[in-house]
Length: 74
Image 1 (cartoon, rainbow, N blue to C red):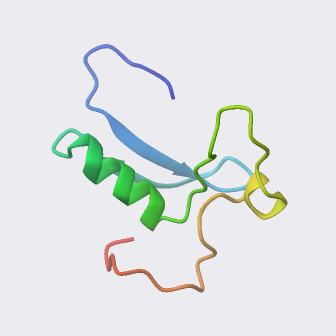
Image 2: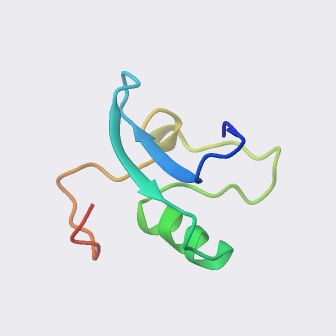
């Protein structure tokens, strides 16, 4: 996360080579909606801060593009 004073919050999705894939505005969303969005996108949530991340999530936390999503805009 990078805080930019005065900037609207947005989730920036990056590819494996750090290329920007998409920007999702977050300013109109509640914390619960943002948490649901991140889970819907396929990100892994650790049970505890010191827990290990499964290997399949280390470099690619989002679902592969061939999987379908309920969100038609993603």
